[in-house]
Length: 126
Image (cartoon, rainbow, N blue to C red; front, top):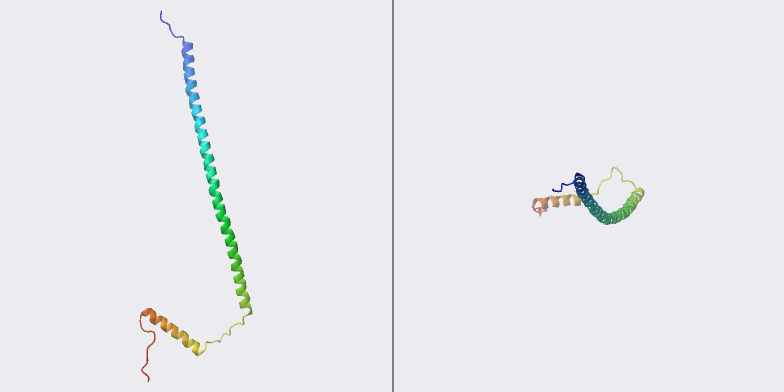
């Protein structure tokens, strides 16, 4: 007579196999979770280092900007003080003939230089 397997024994062995496989998957899931947490922790440390660099650069920029604002404010106030004490220029003010001639010759020389022509023409009035 051949031994006939007991059905309860078969169910017990099948259940043990299923529980073993499920436990294996659960352990593997825990290992993956641990690796993921470790990667997140490493990424957070790297982010903190990068943030520290950005904070240092930002702090330096803000300090330099504040210093530049102080200088600009002082310059603006100095200009205001100077123009506050300078008398207003009369509306009928005109440059003297010598100054006007000098400015006109400067414009003429600049135009001649840009066009490539001689800057002043020599007159034959001797």
